[in-house]
Image 1: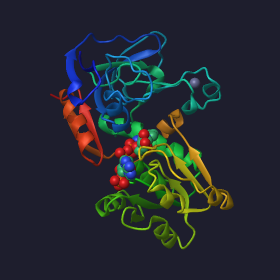
Image 2: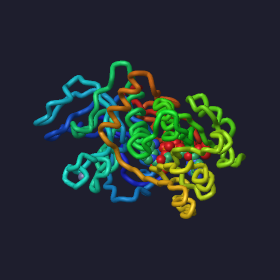
Image 3: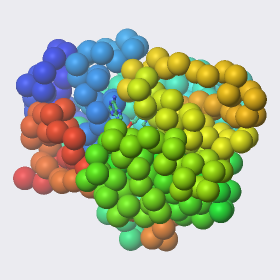
Image 4: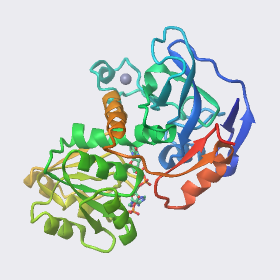
Length: 347
Ligand SMILES: NC(=O)c1ccc[n+]([C@@H]2O[C@H](COP(=O)([O-])OP(=O)(O)OC[C@H]3O[C@@H](n4cnc5c(N)ncnc54)[C@H](OP(=O)(O)O)[C@@H]3O)[C@@H](O)[C@H]2O)c1
Ligand SMILES: [Zn+2]
């Protein structure tokens, strides 16, 4: 099969397409013929650069979210069946730790990732644990299924499981045009909340409004907390969907919180170090809640919502697998809107 092999860390040029033996599925695994896989800044690019914070063994095939058709099954696999269209979730929970035992797989303390710790989907075929596959509803394309399963489960996890967002509440979504932020806007609307989108330029605020946000604030040119208080008639945002942790943006987001508000976060690519006003936190009875990982029920929820047309994948463009290096360059250089999808079956 063809696969893009990472043999050394570095610039996009280190990604080369090669002929390698097609893997065979081990016990409990299935072989998937890959149709779509996305290029992710916070996983693929970071791993390629050698900056991922855990040991990576080379050679490696990147690709955390392949979607495709099952072509073979290993011993003991009851589902999926050969011929089934499946999306793959990257996180492999250990099944042993306290959190796995309690059914909270997202909190697993020994998790591994497809496309990071074992070969992923930048290839014609990928072998994955059957448990990591999810049936793709008929009306979704492979590319849509890839994007839906990659980004929406965390938005559901943060807004439902962590923030307990209720219909009619106010939610402020930071980075509202980013991959996770755009999901936050859509999930917030789906849950019946009133959504305020925060973004870094007027054009990006307008885009967030096109994804369904009710109000928008440019947090680089406006006083965010003041605007949120004005929009919410002094209430503030019951929930802030943060995920940036930029020291200059954090105070605006934090000060936008309502009395007893909840700030949820699963990201820190704005630096991660911020100043916390602890007095405001406790006097106003607020909570800050962190999350990581993927729950199966959030993946199922995401696919169901997409099949029902309640949420949609934002896709920038599709490219053939052999253009993986070019795709990485685009993601690295531009602030593109939506995902770039690699398609091994395209010429
Ligand atoms: N995507 C997921 O499914 C997922 C899941 C779990 C965790 N995370 C984490 O969540 C965070 C966001 O991921 P993402 O995939 O949504 O990234 P992304 O697509 O790059 O979007 C991040 C957004 O944050 C805004 N931003 C503000 N300050 C920034 C700064 N200093 N550096 C970079 N962006 C800044 C940018 O919008 P403006 O220019 O408009 O400000 C950008 O659109 C990451 O830390 C990631 O690891 C993501
Ligand atoms: Zn575990």
